Amino acid sequence: MSQRQQILDALKDHAEGNISKARANVEIFLSNAVGVATHGDLLAEITKQLKIMSDNTEIVEVLDKHFKND
Image (cartoon, rainbow, N blue to C red; front, side):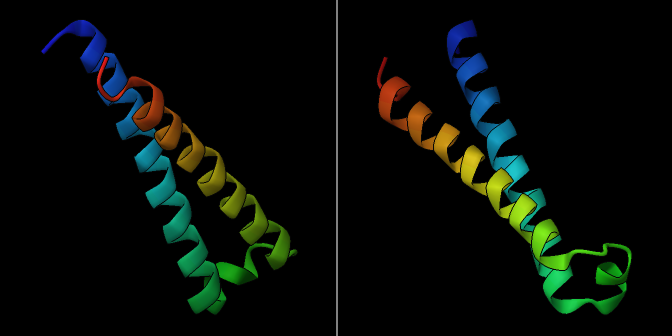
């Protein structure tokens, strides 16, 4: 595997990891009152995690669209 491909794979893996982490946080906020209690503004915290998911999904899509077959 080329160094270029390793970098592209690492970028995609990193973004997908961020998506998984943010999704887990949202699930905790939605299902666990203890997790919610440490955050005063639940909707703001969930929105923050959704933004992380959205930003990283966009990174994955850009990598797939523009660098898939290079």
